Length: 159
Image (cartoon, rainbow, N blue to C red; front, side):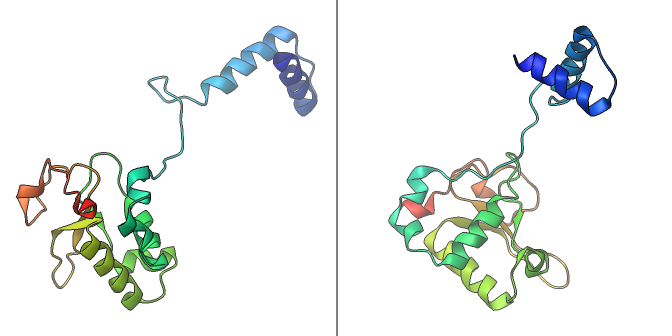
């Protein structure tokens, strides 16, 4: 049924009559385009927040701007760069932040509650502070001030 529908759709879209076999080959080519070089399905990236984090009293007490900042910092995490995440106003102003003061207050709240940890203190003129998510392992990097965090899950929000 699906093959017939796709076969009909391809015939209608192209205006050329294909035999069923060529439509099947086209279907395989369409299906193959949804995979990467290793044959894995291509999917969009996502931000995963554990339920126990979302249900914690500390998370529920966050201001809206802090939740927004947390999700935007977590968006940078790719599975191997925790601790190398940025929260510079110059980056986030293109993501809807209009005030560096609001960003700073949200950042301080996330640090105080323990949902993120600072791995490097930024300094003038062009080195930004780096942060890590406290529900994932801090990944190895030479950029950190405090190397004792590497390979640990800080988990400060649980206290």
